Amino acid sequence: MTTTGMKGYWFGRPGVWSTDICRIALAVVYLLMNLRNDLGSAEQIRAAYPVANYEPDGILMLLGPVMPSDHLIDAMILLSRIFPWLLLFGFFSRTSLWLTLITHLFLRTLIESFSTNWSHGFNVVFLAHLGFLFAPVGQVLSADSLIRRWRGDLGTPMRNGWWAVLLGQWNVALMFFSAFYWKALYNDKPPFSWAHWENMRNHLFSRYEWTGDPVPSHLEAVIASPLLCGLLGAANLIFQCLPFLSLFFVHRPKLRLLFGLAFIVEEIGLTVVMGLADLHWLPLIAFFVDWDHFLKRSADRGTLPETRTGLKMGYALGLIGLYLLFSLNVFGVTIGKNVFDLRAYPFSEFNMYSARLRDPEGEVFGMEGTTFTIEAPTLSSSARSDLEKKLKRRFYAAHSMGQQELLGTLDQARMMANDSSWTGLPAGVVQTISIHKALFLFRTDTAHLAIGQQGLLARWDARSGSCLNWSSVMSQDEREARIRIEPGCGAFPVSQITGFHRHGAEQVLDHRIIGTDAYVDAAVLNDYRYLLITLQDPSDGSKMQLMMRTDDR
Image (cartoon, rainbow, N blue to C red):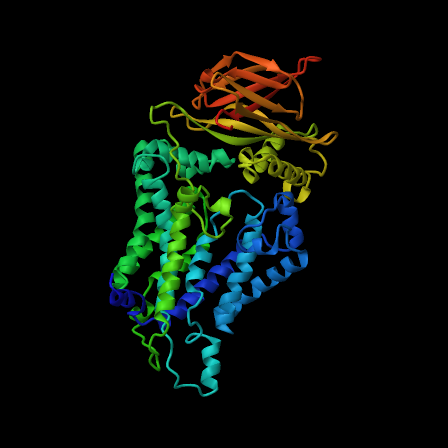
């Protein structure tokens, strides 16, 4: 594209009305976020999240490794409720544009700093806002414009914000295109094989039963039908790709809007099919609409000539480039670190639900997950089961945590399980909480997931406190692999080691013991994906099992 073409792309259309309508749309998004968020106060945040797991992401890294003070958090919460209203009505529009982003980004980054991987429910809002951050807002449809009119300032030409509107559109479209890229073109699978009916069905299981939620009744017929699952997978790829095409039709407002509407269809689909109700995204469709064209409005006083076009295009292309470096995992390929390693919130790969969840050889597919068990003698079995499911839904990724994060999660689970306002049960009834790593089997001959092998990761006991179980495989030489067992909830000798494949087939492996470590034949070990290690107390015969992957070396 020539320089003239680039200028025509970024500055070639009037955008005064589009700029301020997008300002209003952003304000509505933040007001909706405030309605659905869990940020009532610093005290509530400390009660709801494992503070011991705090590791700052994004802008919070500037404040050091310690969690911000309660006074700062509470101040940010208060300001985050004020500035979206100022932005909506256009009071101090440019200042409100900046401070709305800063306060909300601070608070959401705080929440994501408690987990290894973060939720993607708010990234696209912040990324669209970053593209729009230097827009000349407040020129129309604002209290600022009324104040200027009251002062008699009627002759000053307006500034065109088209480039900022377009950059916001780029960032929304790229989020969906990144998801398309990871599903259709990357992530260790043949192109477009993600849409295979069995893979789509397994992703529905991973969204619901794997995380502890029941499958919605309206999806039961879809899960039972290979045809419907295949169509659903194909539709998901199509509607995630279409918003990106809108970027090539910026001078064709109807086509631009048509392709942009795929973003609305996709988000409604995510709500209905996946239960990911991020409906606060919907006002972002404003960035795909040429409002000046459809409203047939031009600036009342004309527009000023474009200035600093090089800086504006540099910011736009730089932000898009940075976005792509993260979202397409260029950093991961070149320097071996992804966005989670770099803690680069709100930038992300957007590769959620993009894995291949089917065995290409037709075997039963298995995937690691988390299960909880509790001991509460005074509760009925149904009440215990309900509480176990609630804990699983809240901490369904505990199986992938490191030791310190797992301890923090266990402590948070203990507090929540004994919080009557959260459980609806009498306080103090839970005596023991156990977290297990489990193998979930995605079988095609059943309508639900099956739980295969599982092993204890951590346990809290009202009498003895918290403990962890841990094991790791360390290769000694080409012939033998050493399995190191760290003393944990039960420092018992290893009595049996079972190797099993992802699809559940298993075999007891020969081993020898030196101290607390076990040694197995390395060639045999390489034939299996997981190990189930049984520890047995020689005094009373009680047993405990650990589950681990053979590639955890």
